[in-house]
Image (cartoon, rainbow over all chains, first blue to last red; front, side, top):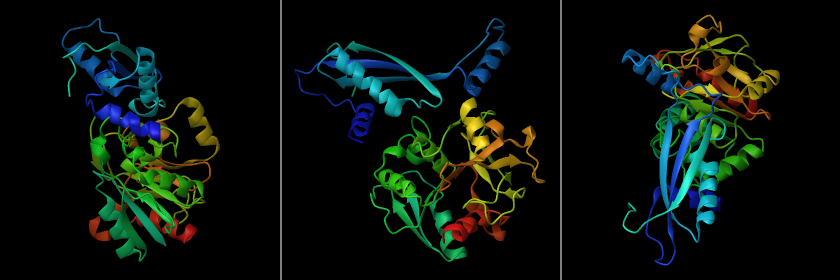
Length: 111
Length: 229
């Protein structure tokens, strides 16, 4: 449960860490597995068809999550984010996830 | 019997469950705040419906990390009964106590209506006060009750007779038209392999008094009392 609670903190807070610890930003996409029916996507597709976009073949809706975190290096940040996705941010029964981690430039973080 | 009725921030059916168990059925029923880490002394745990943590991220996803969930896991592992309804079902799935997950209703609409379910078997601690084949009117009230499992898990559930309740019409016929949310195989309620944890989307506490339009829900509570009391 220790890891789970640290994942929770990571998901909810972006309190500044010690000045010498680099900050990273993770951009996470969570989507329904291909085998899972997506009623939202189907409805959006119907809306696009009714607007005249007859070429729209498929629509899948998902979630986009940004996480700011302090970590010693990018590999550690990525490993933490991967664990967060496994433990909380995605439900492996119905969802897949992918993410990108990048070093945060000063002044860009939100609180 | 001593029932613990769990209360998370945003739970809304705890008062109704407590009322039915205590005032209609004469059981001890205590509302237990989610920060409690000890459920010793309780025979059964009820995880009621509502919108725990505002349904943020996914329904039931955050409630899974409340301190009481560790105690709930131990209670379940000891073979003692756990019943989850609506958001409680979603929490039990997120916690891994039951298979599957609840997706957005296929209609994309919140469905709040009287709903019949067919009792598929009467040899469980959640259905023994009914007869197999009975149709019970149990209200539903949810936007995300579309039960999903993959093909292999569905085959396993069917083979092990773990689908205890299916959405049906008033005659107990399980038809696509009677499915209110797109759930696979009309699944309204499933039980774990050990037979002591059951989750369902309907709200039996809302049809446990004639004044409120029906008493079929009593059968679920009476089953628990008969089986484990």
